[in-house]
Amino acid sequence: MRRTLALASTVCLFALTACTGTADDTVESVPDTVEDLAEEGPSGLALVHRGYEGGDPETDQVLVFHDAVTGQPLHRFDLPDGSVDPMATEPPVHARFSEDWAFFVYATREPNAVHIAVLTDSEETPPTAEPTEGEEPSAFFYLPVESIAPSAGEVLSDPVVHGDRLWFVSDDPQDANPPRVLSVPLSAPSGTPNQEGSLPLGENRRPSDWSLTPEGALHIRDSVQTRQVGGGGNLVVRQTGDSVVNATLSVDGGQWQSFDDAPVWGAGTALLRSDGSGGEPPKGAYLVTVDAQGHTATRILENADGPVAQYALPAERDAVLAQTPTAWFRVDLDENGTVTGTEELFPRFHDSSMDGWPLAVRWVRTPVAIESPSPTG
Image (cartoon, rainbow, N blue to C red):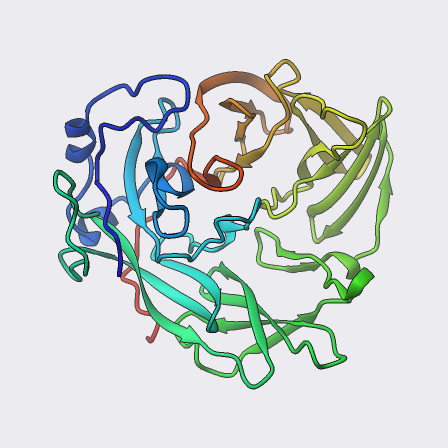
């Protein structure tokens, strides 16, 4: 049974400061139906909270759009219970939502399946649980409408949405063949899937990491050769098309690596964090850009309160929102990828997950209109 949460709460989301504004201000800014919301689409810093406002990290899972200047919550979409692992440190939630937010995909273990949920509102489908006294039901939530079940012996995992297709991994632990990356149309998820690639098995039969570039090209890490790039420091990359997906930078006696389970920047740019070896990790991160002549590496947030933990990208890729252990920052870039400004925005948020903070999905500055979701066509 779903547990509904308050649409606008006076309990502050901030870790270190009080909220600005009132609950009434937030309520007035939230549309009543998906149709109302679809006119412009939601905007802001989208974060998945596991244990919203101190709730149960297994059942109180919420996508919240925060104002990218003040951090104030603007929109809230409830997720299906348990759809994001509350114990995992970096589930790739950025890849589970469609560009227009109409679809959310996730996998379950018991029973094993990949699920498609569509964005709806309480006016269309009333929640099954009564709200707690003093609370209002969530205005929007993702309703599961389709499932892809495995065949005998098969295990399905790692769902990703890109464009109009759903990608996922199929594996048979009893089969000597490596896991496969498959895709199906969101409009016909029960059809015969396309086989997009196989994941080579490494040490202890661990499948290779994989991701999709912003253009939708499949990148399988262990199937792409490394390339050493000239310039200051020692940079080794794996690229698919123009996108640097994996990178390792050795500079000043330290090593920096691309973030796991994070969005691919694209266009030859990548954000790197310390590999964590050698004691306390250094502050900030490195922004690297690869071109035909070599590469440039720029240290960002070197004077912040700790290393960059996660980041959110806008579609324009001309800035980044980066979270340190205590705060969110905005780093602006020019067309050449040069840092033009850095600003501390607001304290980082808390939730009840293992890491204690919500997961970055993306930063929406130009809203995308929500289409009418219809996965069955």
